[in-house]
Length: 156
Ligand SMILES: Nc1ncnc2c1ncn2[C@@H]1O[C@H](COP(=O)(O)OP(=O)(O)OP(=O)(O)O)[C@@H](O)[C@H]1O
Ligand SMILES: [Mg+2]
Image (tube, rainbow, N blue to C red; front, side, top):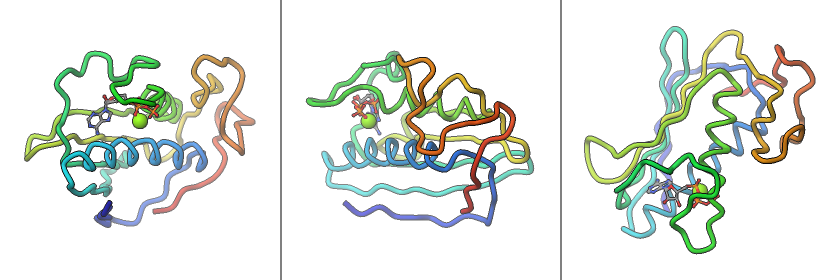
């Protein structure tokens, strides 16, 4: 499965690196699952504005026929899927003061996931973004120690 990296500008964001990695794995896996069905590619890239980093993951799969339940825990259309990937990823994004959307592409078939993260002081709450259904626990290896100071720095 070819994954094409479309490099963007240098940018530094304060975030929990383990959680961001987990989120990107989830999004890339979804894109790869979709693209596998159509024997096509996945692309990932990023851009920045003055105030935010935008990371996008595009596939050329069948796209979404119904967007209603995408971010509902345990919603899955895949045999063997857990239905956790997107909801967990959105929680991670929001815990960093950002957002995550998934929609059909307007420039072709397939979907695009867009992750937006604020640049500057990221806000990471201790609401346990990485562990829906398990309040008080985080799947992050590093974990959070302060509500206003996320650990780690991700450079891209
Ligand atoms: N890129 C995509 N293209 C088409 N449908 C998608 C895409 N990403 C997600 N979906 C749909 O959203 C559903 C939920 O995705 P989510 O990642 O939360 O769970 P999952 O992939 O089914 O299982 P897992 O928890 O193992 O990731 C998927 O089952 C699929 O129907
Ligand atoms: Mg998934």
